[in-house]
Length: 171
Image (tube, rainbow, N blue to C red):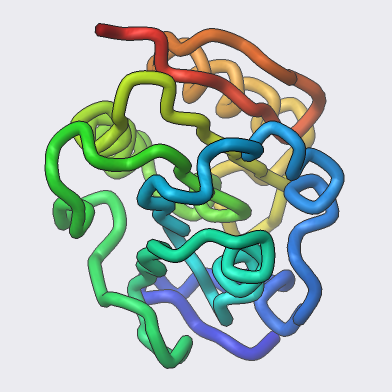
């Protein structure tokens, strides 16, 4: 464990250097999006942001509560607005973050996703159950996943245990 979040919760995935396996496996869904702004929310050490850059993305904003990733922008996730203009983001990554936010913080962040999402924006979101999170069990994590997905109200592209890909279809 290399990082401590502001709410005293730890992410065991932060020391990893390879991109999220789910992101790497599903990179095909990002095809045609490389000219759009991508936001890596809860970027941690920047591993997924770097993956996007390797895939040809020229505009990647990396956002986290702790800016130990050299290019990251600091934001208290679940409280602060995301550093992006309305309807300006084509790709949102939110990997291994939401389970560390309480319900009020998750709702605020989902509102921010909706605010910054361009038409046809893709979100890739991953969760895991952790004893130091708000999703301590598999069942709680699955309930949280459903709540997040339903709150977004976006079109389902992929949906499996602990992760999903969805697309904004609002005009």
